[in-house]
Length: 429
Image (cartoon, rainbow, N blue to C red):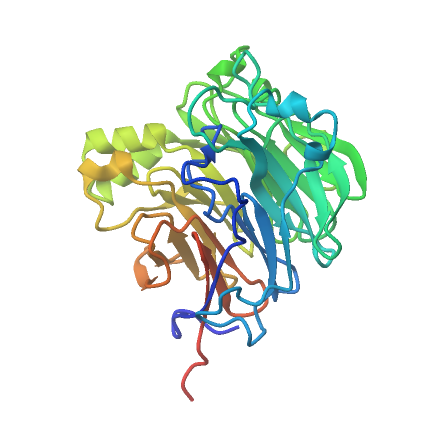
């Protein structure tokens, strides 16, 4: 694989999304607080393990691309997708639909998260209810304000069929798939019946294999009221598929708890537990990044953890947070290593910075971070001082909401309204 530091990637293709439903309007918006993008924004980018097939989802559809094909070229109107489907939840064809859509005809079930599986042309989809109106009641919630549970769907893009559904018993915020086998994790939304719950599944069975963690059992979160849950849990497998991690903010907000599990012995509980104190993040923002104590306090207090990823060697853990923050922690000790924030951000602007999206490059040498409104993806050193190495610019006019790297070839995918493919040129001879 080409070293992206010596050969910075260049924009090679722009892929357009599926046209939205004919009933859509410019005010299409989420009925939950976890999703603030419009209907055209990419909700997920996921490479198949073969490295060449890229699944791209928007709220109303999924497209599958072969990133090695020459017909995927800049300016191509459809980008040459292998398969393209308009998403329609299985619930929309059942008598139980009214349980989820209430009385509003303007609400639709769309895609919140999507992950590729080991089977060709197949992916897992976590749906959510979205509203075209953008106003009025949150129609996918109960009277107590909790978000309704929608089943995860195992979909074949080859013949556009739902192969299996998985009833998590809670609204699913994110999916984490194993690189080793057909196992996957679901994380509950903060405002759902499964507050603080992460569940383990196998795509071959609709039954849950295990409930991994519950908020009430996490140290520092002993409150019996689910309404006090500060944030949703996040979970992912490491690069071997033998370990997975679960992270959640403590009940008092003073730290985040990170638990590591042996995927073969999950019933005995975590084999390692870390606490990353909020004060550590605050001190890093203040001392290394130049933010005032007031700004650093606000950012560390409200910087919700949105996603986590292990480095390929398992030595580090990357966390994407609100306010444009990304941080890395030691995968063995839990100690904070680096806090990444854009160098040109003024402390007075900190509160309005969008959430960061970040991922490791496959060689672990760099971290790609996007999410800012300027549409630029920044590449930072992950093994030294965390310095900025280069920028990927000119591919997007709006916020980059997703980033993914092919595990086998030198291709980076960045998702906004359109999806950009960046390819490193071969180094000079």
